[in-house]
Length: 220
Ligand code: ADP
Image (tube, rainbow, N blue to C red; front, side, top):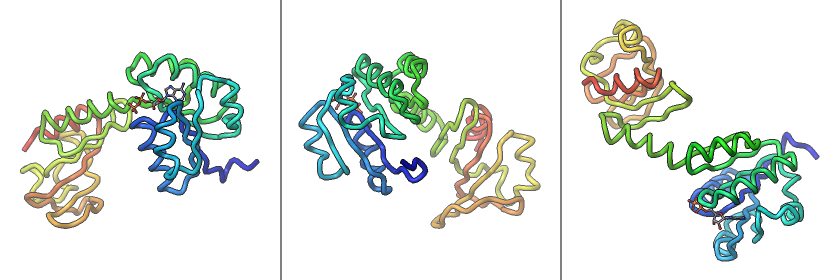
């Protein structure tokens, strides 16, 4: 069994998160086996996903019957049912599934999933809440924290950059951030160079330490 060309994913839980993820994978050419204990949900996604099955992910026998141990990648998209999420994840870990993503509803839940062996833990609501907070509270147009203390922010070019070559603006030493992309009104984003001269109304994407990106978005 070749694992390099393996484009199959097992998605457990077809709630809002699991179903969106499963549909997106299918749209990108992945083979998805969607599993949920709710016949109604499985019915709803039967046509859109490659395979669907009604089964209980906390049942070791049921997981083996659908061949869960054969998958290279699995996502446990059960959130609110903590016990089920933890049990299903630990069964997949026991089976030796090499790449397990698990959705957590809180940091504590996430910590448990990590401790029992999930390889990737995602906190969609928590992360999105933090992200939207940056948009609501400031002048940021978009914000993504890529890791602890490193972020990308989308904002309007501040006055101090207008008409100056980025390479001569001293922006990196002054604010600790790097302008990575720029977008003129009505145009598409393009990468920024030392020669780029921002104009009034341009939108820029900056990268740097989270605090620096946040602070930079507040200047005008
Ligand atoms: P979301 O917020 O993304 O909608 P939920 O936690 O509400 O996530 O939904 C998770 C899904 O997981 C539900 O559709 C539920 O039926 C399913 N689910 C819960 N427990 C199990 C289980 N033991 N086996 C299979 N599916 C389960």
